[in-house]
Length: 272
Image: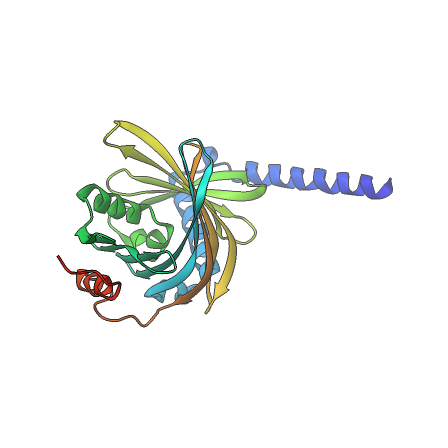
């Protein structure tokens, strides 16, 4: 009984402490300058938690893992193995399945895909979606975009997200694109990011949420090894990273169409 009472008292004390902290840092009673300064402090803590200068100086990653895909009814439709390669800021290649016989490759404003029919250009809409996703990427925001002209940051208060006390930070760019980050008050790592995007085909605005968990440190840089993505409350993908390494030594033409043509030839296909 005494133990139960002690636990209850601890919970009450924690709630009172959290309430006091939230009241003391209410963004509604802070000046714009104070909100900006507070946001910058939180973002600096986040960068340090991610690895500081090691994180900022990283040139790319190579990861293996699995992605769970979900249908329109929210049910999981299966897992796909992948190898994912990044060369920051805007080169990404994803080889799907253990055979690597399906590949999506993006290089800035260009994109190609490899499948059993050969190598072809990605549709313009797919490349545009990739470029837009880059602008919302937490990694890209922290590494590069925070220093862009027109970027504004402001503190948005304290909340509880996934049972963790977090600080919300809002980042707005020159095009009025807003990304909200929930940063764990204890670990200073991102718990989730939220962005509102426009579906031009449907003419509606969609809330896109990314949830980050299972952080691990690799070569001095902290990486979330599980990332879930939701759109308007519906889970669309869940990524599980098995192994990652920083700054992989890749061939100079690795992110080019020529590399995909070569891979297609290795798979036994004939160039069109």
